[in-house]
Image (cartoon, rainbow, N blue to C red; front, top):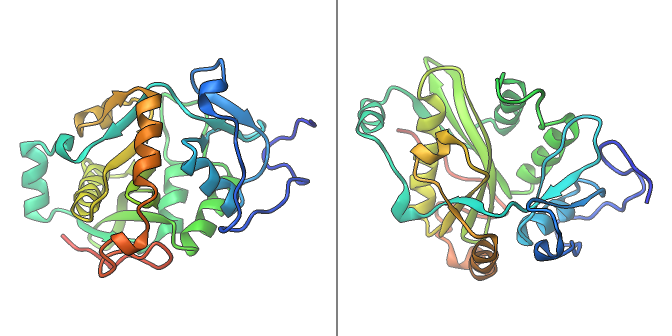
Length: 248
């Protein structure tokens, strides 16, 4: 197989109704890396998330598909909102919306400086791919605003009753936390069973994330991803439409 940087131009485009079978995560000798190559078309991305994988690579590399063991997740009963964050949310320091400006959120996540990373993994190909599946109704954003300025937020995907968190950014202290906590509270109220945080960070640990074995994660995925839109509160969420605006 040729070694391409980024998207393989010869790999077929898969629409949201087409699927690709990845290698099973347990078959790989690696604790995270499962496969490489392909593209970021809607069917390819949805196939990956449904099978417990996600793309994570840098500019100049092929698309690398990961399924970490252990997996980092937040269950509804574990979501932690500190007393200081409760005060910030109650005061309405930030206005929070959903899906008001997904492209701005993902671009801000790509541009924010992260001292623990040499370069962003959110390449231009990734940005375009996630905007496309957002327009199809699968990817969603939570935005934190202050005085009319976008100062923080996060984005991810919802499939069935699992939300796959991807990235967040903050230009003001506690802005991304507020956006995430309001989103997480909404999701758990709307029957989401877990939020997939992928890998450990201290920031996510403070919000209640914990490690579980990959085998357990995959079992939960198989159970809860089967719950489709008919089992979700369609007044709040339509997997092929958009979320209602939600303000603090």
